[in-house]
Length: 151
Image (cartoon, rainbow, N blue to C red; front, side):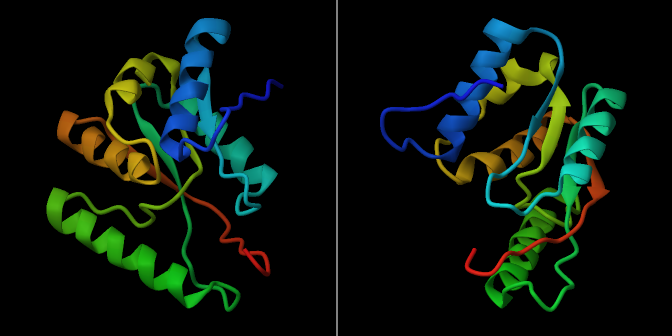
């Protein structure tokens, strides 16, 4: 494991891009998996998305939550449903969980990912829009919806 840091907070998109550059320079061909560090993704789901990513080169795999549990904050449920509906209206491509941080793709897609604009939370939505525009398939896999108290 390697810990990559920035001297100051540059945003989630910049952090992902730093990780992608590291994979290109130091690791080489592989399946790239991103998982938010806020406890929302189980180890089992991370392993499943990694395996699915390896089995589906050239596609972006998305861990898709249902937001059905009683522990899901209303702002998260409403916010995700809203962005998912807007995304579907704009792209004509339904995605159930546009806000998921659990994603996987083949490292051959890193150059594409690095061309996507955005340094903050906008980056991940921009990735979905760019994939849709470029015809890159989005594959959703159901994952557990986990919300911890205080998160």
